[in-house]
Length: 237
Image (cartoon, rainbow, N blue to C red; front, side):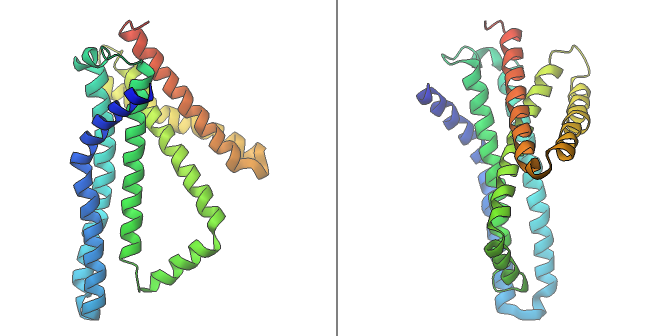
């Protein structure tokens, strides 16, 4: 099972790396250029540095948007179009197929975050922000760990939510994109937010723990819904 999942992940990562790896490297290289110019040119280079910072910010936003588009498009192309029949003919379970998509998407989103963090650290070296970053890391290790856990679970939940609403929408004869957007925002802002508000009012000192537990349960629920609907749609019982 793990061997088959590993082979599936190999092809998923090859697809993503071909497009996103150059973006990660470019973001880091621009950060290096900003820091190098700031250290060697002084205040006279401020307009050039400001322009490169704008380019870095725009590129980081573009990378995030492209990652989301690729995650969605990869799922649709492999599962919900004609190639889906070929995908489901592979000697693996539908759960392994979905898991490979979710794991690869999760890892690429994390690598995107990591490239932004590394670039921020690079162009902050020996600047007025560097000491602030060091002190923040030194004196807030628990908050950093809790924030990382929250980001991990929230990202996983969002990926599974994408897959669930897209799968439901593709079962409709028309207005699939509109239906997917409507379901996504309904679940995000009416279902999940109300659950988190109830937890915040009730859990008190355990709000963080129960919020993360709720995120994990939502992710598992969306994952199950996706697998159940795919098996039903392609008669894979």
